[in-house]
Length: 423
Ligand SMILES: O=C(O)C(=O)C[C@]1(C(=O)O)C=C[C@@H](O)C=C1
Image 1 (spheres, rainbow, N blue to C red):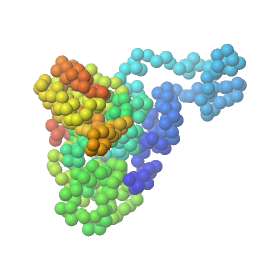
Image 2: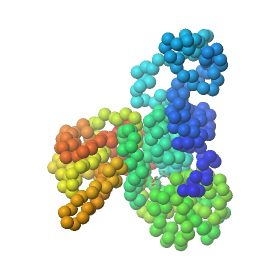
Image 3: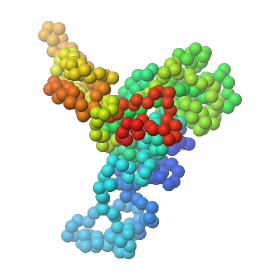
């Protein structure tokens, strides 16, 4: 990832945990993203309170102009509190803050009609395409890490996040499973995106000149056999995202390096397509989840999926068996089960008389099942499971993506979310 770090601050502006965004003016995301989390929270408050009217004159504190600092509130009854009346600019009641209304609190976007959707990567990444499939016409906001996309929604900088959770060839994207648990966002939908990879290089570069191939680790894994079959037994290097790898080649005029990325990334960064469709399987699909601050109301009039995560204190495999049977007895199909190490209690010590002390790993289990939380079968299954688990959380109950895999949404066609329910 060193190379990825090297491009930070170059061509592609993204949201970062630290650093500044240089997005074009005119959008809230365009404004500076400050250096620390607390600065960012302040900026977020500023973003949500700014409007297009000119800024009011800087308030005076104790008769002094206070141009760059947020003033600490005056202590009631103190001299400051009296002179603090001065804080309200005398002229123009139009400059006074507007009280929050019900519409500000609704799940609809605060920033006008366009939904702002955070994704990890730079323009041309598959995640950007997934954001567009989930929310056609949205403003896609690039973020340099998954964690930043979560925070952008939590801090109201974005309205939604669209993040990959699994790929048909590469398997689960574990980082996002862990982040789903660490953050309080809700899964409100899913999109499945066919991933069609290209081998990209600078114009005029021939395959024989290549010394390395760079891309997102998932993309490298998805193309491993094809690259070997093509005789490209050169070094592979991991990058933050596929389009970022393409951008890096263009920005540094690297003639010995190719990237695995989308045809759109080739267009955006002026690269040529050396080979088209280099994924090991034509049916290469990545599943993304759509995240929001509020859950959607589950329904039963269309196919729904529910994602849960659980942990238990008991020994042995019998708990997992009971969990699975709670679904099986109600004829509820599971679509996914994933285990991750328990962060707070990774190891269990088991004292076995005369044999010694055994150490078992402790796990969190992530389960997706095919039913809505509005379905009484799902409610009963979870009520039963709750009896023998120490922790149970519903990550979301949301419409399944039923669009055919080869159907990329065309302008005006119903999207995954429009077809089902706007999440
Ligand atoms: O790098 C990108 O373009 C991404 O959107 C990320 C990502 C992933 O995380 O799996 C998404 C889809 C593909 O499976 C390859 C990479």
